Amino acid sequence: MLTIEEVNENELKFIGEFDASQEGLASEKLEKHDETLTIDMESLNYISSMGLGVLVKTYHRLNENGQSLRLKNLNKHLKDVFKYTRLDQIFEFVD
Amino acid sequence: MKSQKVFKRHVNELQSIFSFLKGNWNELNVKDGVQMEMQLSVEELFMNMVRHNSSADGDIEVLVERKEDKIMISLCDFEEVPFDITKAEEIDFEEYFKQKKFGGLGLHLVKELMDEIKFNHSDGISTITMTKQM
Image 1: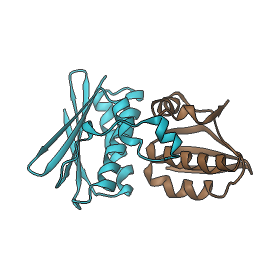
Image 2: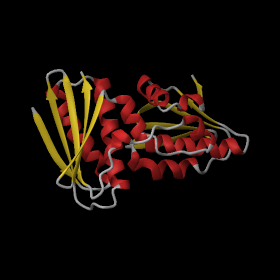
Image 3: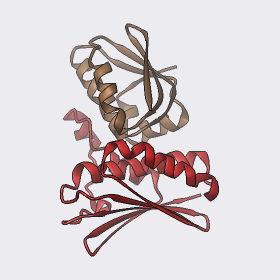
């Protein structure tokens, strides 16, 4: 189960587990953002490839308009998932 | 010890699958990090069957087993034309990023996370078995 909180207009907080069944919810939230966005993942403990796909799609959309997608506070498991899928090469990670 | 359960072919079954797996972890004495990697790999294979196996509309069976210091999970599904995931093409990440793709990372992830993946097709049933050293 994934919960998405609005920290401010340029930052979201993902809480819980981002599995394939949460794709619609996450896409709907992310599509509302057109400017550089930060996602706080401190309380996210799981992400599958469907979740990664939503983030990559958002990254490309923002990037095409000169904006970016920043990810922060990833736990070790999430960092490993980004590393295994080489996505650590495109995303900007902040602490 | 062996445990098995069938699940409907739908994304909404993921929570039931996760509950089934979590119910087995304690008894099988599976470490936290391995639990997460196994859950992720099961989701990827299950969703691959749900989304890409158009020849089936029946349930998908999940089996969990521990043999000595190895945990093994199998997913079984009817499949008219077998797709052996162990022979799936590797991703060219340079091209992947250049073409701005955003899907298709699931099988790559499973191969990275698991120690061994085996595919078998018999009597119309495809079985994918993943093994992870404890």
